[in-house]
Image 1 (cartoon, rainbow, N blue to C red):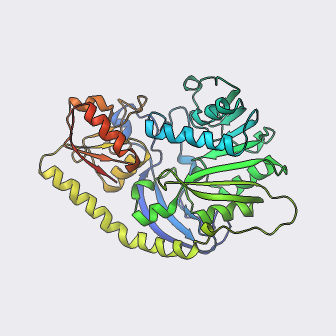
Image 2: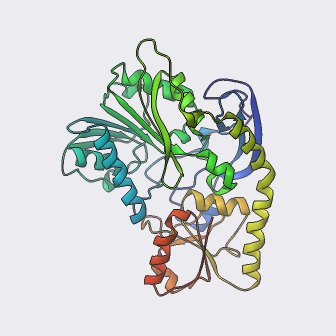
Image 3: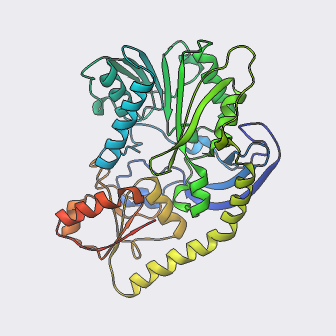
Length: 395
């Protein structure tokens, strides 16, 4: 597929491609029932382009027709106590901050429905969630209020669903016509200045600073900084209230209202990041080869020493880590995941079996590589309960 030459956020043509990757699996969180299916999984290319006008970063080689979002797609983190505590605290904070009591909630990209359910329960709210991957068998009726789920992508045809609070978490990074989509949301929410719009996306500053190649994968066609996110929403007709970081600096949060009438926007200090982004994309391209070589050498040494290496976290980060480094089962034997729905499946293109933690007592690891450092303490506690004491590394 030819590379896009226009920014999907601001339409500028002032683009600079700074990172390319070939043969990347086009889905990281699909259920793959056999090793053969995993090894032969379809691939696409990544060409990360930096817009020098607005700071937006996107995959200029992205082809959304290659993706599958269905009940087979399972990116949930809801089996982690660490994540669930933070997730509940976020829901409680939003209910308190915006007085979400007896209100109507819209969630775009609701996943398996956990967050919408919490918002409804905490504030006796009602709501509707949109996601082609939502699985009715894995959602439960809230104790207070009610939630319904639509197995479809949110689009203009659902503009009739109005809400006092419209949220979209970890979804905008998947949507290629970025500017068009945010404009669709703006038209749908109307001009009531009391309507709150809340989005959450990964933060690209951290990815660039850490050369976090495990956070660059095909489904994520968009990469946002505080500035590029705020500029996108302002250009679509929103008044930005706050933009900031959460979850150990991994997630960007933005909340805004429809901008009504003439007003001069107040720029937030976090938005002034164009020069920083320009420097970081250059450093990412310069430092990434060394980061990759460092990981390959380290894992190669474990292999020479006859040590069994596993990764913990079989989702997108795990897939990106293995495929970028080209690590098959001979180098990293297993992928571990606490999500019971992933067990017995296989990692896209590299073929490792996904097992539950309890299976490590039969195939004892010498080294566990944790795909997200925020879960390190939780994982070490799980290993200790199993009577295991491997070396634990984090990305």
